Image (tube, rainbow, N blue to C red):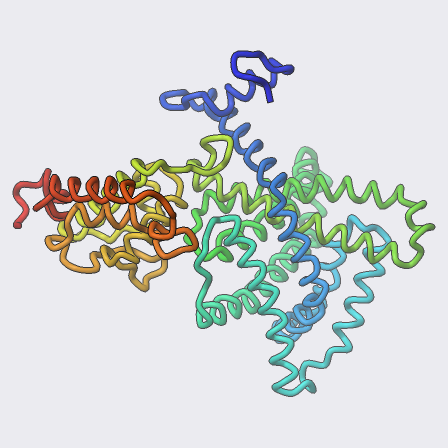
Length: 452
């Protein structure tokens, strides 16, 4: 780091840093703000990768995939057998493992052999339950990874998991293989062959043949981004993440295929283990692509997280108190105006700040008995008791005292007695100055026509 007042070693880098993070985008046309937003997103993703959380989740999912791949395919095989398209599993695996070259064909043959040896019908109820549990464990870990990317702490309930995961296991494979079958049928149709011989239709058909697989992969990624996180994902965010992830999948797949072709030395060194090593590396790359795409979707839906180099907004004590009063007032206004209760995400969007500090302050207010969360999905917030009985000082006190009772609470900090006297006098003066003011007064201050 450079000392204050001195120029850095890389003035161009300093200029780019100021351009990316300190430029006010308010009022700028799209052609000027768009590139800056793209640079901010690239810098934010690079920052998230450098922190290591995405890479750790990708490595964890590789291990879980190795344990769950055969049970997952066995259950999918059983489901797809009822649709008569179970023979499409092998072409799908060959497509996914295409960057591995000949090793991909070998791995596909081994996996299909394992799946064929798993006789779901003769496993019994206990054996099938174990297979299903293994698959649910994989999907639960995927959901947790996505929730981490989306800054979501609350997971689905057991009933929601059973409903949503079962839907994905039944509907997802059927849609994928139906799309593959439709694509293959169209490609093999006699009329398509006739039109391909006519220019410029032939060029258009060939381009469409290359574009359709790209769009299918983008659709699969977008489907996962839309339904796996335990939150409402905007269609625009899911599609943006899916398109970028599909582009990365094809680009990195081509690079990885070139690496495998030129890895004769590694094959000679590792012998038969080389196939397993390449398979695990490609699994890791695939999961990392999936998580980076989810990260892009998150930033598209929550651009407030692109503000500031650190990626998070830290509040001063004064800002925290203002946020607590603001949130309580907004919740009260919607309550008295009989409008739809606020969710945390809606409050964040209304105030144009990140979701994390909003959730933190809402949790403190809920613990203090000022507000309560509903059982809706997503959660919304209502008064925990009549707001005409909740004083403004009580909200501020809840914010100041939130977290007391932890490892380093107010009473456990040693200090001279006169320090406690000053702090108690300050709180008493604040309480006296705010005496008689309630949350309802704040909520109805600009609405004199509302009944009190």
